[in-house]
Image (cartoon, rainbow, N blue to C red; front, side, top):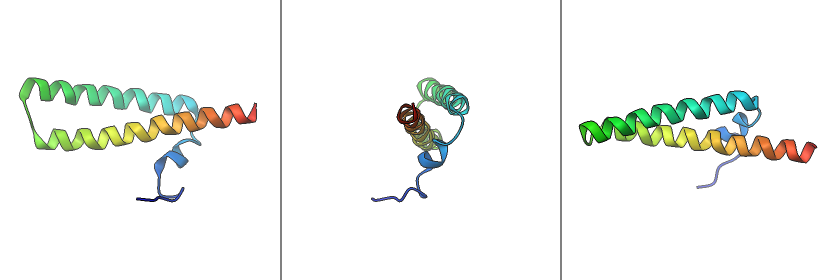
Length: 77
């Protein structure tokens, strides 16, 4: 599936302050860790699995945005 720049969050997120991006990444990692631990303790649960998929998607967008932000800084310097 092909997306335009306006359709992917990474392009908007890469314009954020690097500290904000890092904070969001850290927060998402903590929530993901909580849900993974929950699944280990309680067993499979569809809602939690779906939530994890969404969180992993958000995390990946923030991580890509962080790399884009760093690349932009390198080209400016």
